[in-house]
Image 1 (tube, protein in one colour):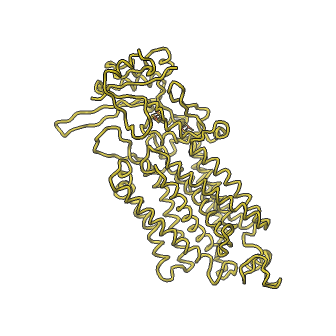
Image 2: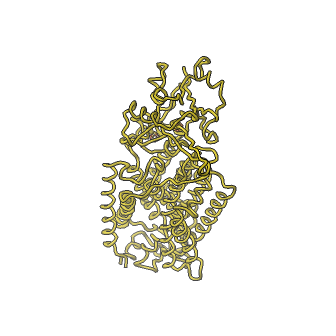
Image 3: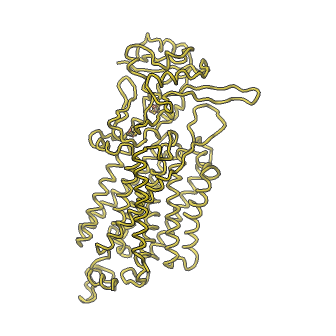
Length: 405
Length: 179
Ligand code: SF4
Ligand code: SF4
């Protein structure tokens, strides 16, 4: 059922589009982008955030299994970590194209500014990437001690890097919609949401050739069902966060913040907000999951897809809403206008190309490596099970044969 | 070491934009870029209306958020208070643009966010930069805040001043005469 060729063609097409967009941006600079002096950060910043949120989410959810030892989630380990590395790398590609002078980044080392959240962003995500690679390496080697240690380090660095990304926005006193501690906290939460949504979709697709794969079943529950439950939980928390963000923004009409919230609720961003963020990104998937039979694999898959789409628009809106309200210089001015920006074809192409690149490299990973759990007894769900005789311990090799047969 | 400041008397501004053009000439800017500008707002209801004008440019903030957020110290503050950009170190992240509450920054063709420099080459000679010297009504007065005998300090002692959005914590170095 899973059509590998189709996915390869699709991702290759996306990559070609992305290359065209990238060339346009490199040659024509900001003219190829929908940004301007009043809205300096545009869709590429949102795209970058989308990718690194995904990366953080994948490794945070993966850590449930191999750091916090919830056996149920051990099975997602390698696939999640590989996905985490790839989304991070393509996040870097997107931000690299957004930067006017990416090669000047050497000055992050020689002329670091310790009060800059973007300096810390570079440093922390750099460390996080290196740790992720070590973690995956030791997972492949089957060195559980070391991979658990690196898993823990990845977990810590993911939290540090990602909450700092929230602070990139949160530190901006000039932008009332962003400023404050909310962004850092919200980014961690939405990483968990992204992670569980992406893994739901991923494991549904990976498992499709063989719905009864025994390594995906734990105490009679399929991994996609378990991920769906996580997804429902994080959807609920995200709704709660969103409601309070909106209510505190409206209450007391704090200048700048109030208008930005109104731009989302009833202004230029409202279509996107209600349709994609609220309906597609939160309410529908929550309903799909929480109605009877909601954790059936197909429905989790659908809910995951909806959530990912919604999250993508959430990132666009988050970046846009922070800059849409013009700074106010006159005391007592009554009229509010909006700062306008748009998303150029090149920006769309770059983001889609990065998605294509992630998918393609992931497929290569699936083909080249064994991403299943190794040396696990599926009867007792432990590694190197002592209760079983040798033949009940399914080795890496036999799983491979089993599902490629 | 001098500590530069700027006093602007907006009530004397006629809105002729000579300052904007003089600056573009002095700094050889393309027509779409300008480092100083006039913000306008209409007050009142027709037929009783008046146009309020506010000359704006980089405030060379003492607590400059643009310098604070710049990852590579490409944006930096000199001892005399002038905030400048080292193009060779700028990565083009535009963080300084999102951090500035005065919209002082403008991206140039080379993708570096540029802005008003307060023309230190003029100030250090004791001269007024182009925006101030070209103005027929002497709306702007640059000077040394540390020199008790500077024209700027004498003027500051005579008028009441206010600053723009001081609640952003930027500690701007531009003072506006209260109307
Ligand atoms: S006005 Fe803006 S650009 Fe100028 S120093 Fe202040 S924050 Fe920086
Ligand atoms: S765009 Fe350049 S000057 Fe502005 S914060 Fe980034 S590196 Fe610094």
